[in-house]
Length: 68
Image 1 (tube, rainbow, N blue to C red):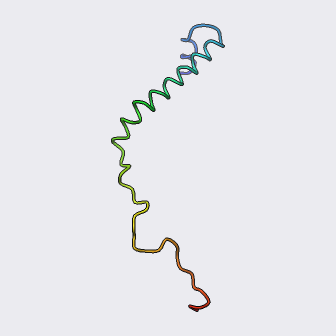
Image 2 (image 1 turned 180 degrees about the vertical axis):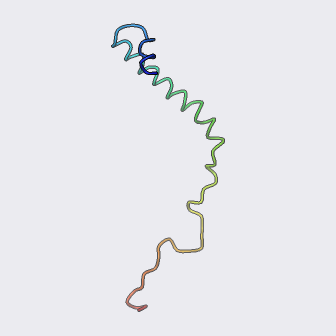
Image 3 (image 1 turned 90 degrees about the vertical axis):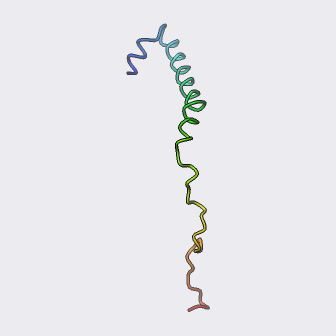
């Protein structure tokens, strides 16, 4: 796939490299602008359990000399 893309681009190797970097930047920009926000509406980000009050303590209690 990459070889076919490299052969399809016009110009010498330096121009091809610049074009590939430009295409990569455009793909990343399109993902962040349109694809990821579209997919984020389908993901369950609101259904987290981190920080939920379970009624217990955050750390186990270790015996102290007074309780022994």
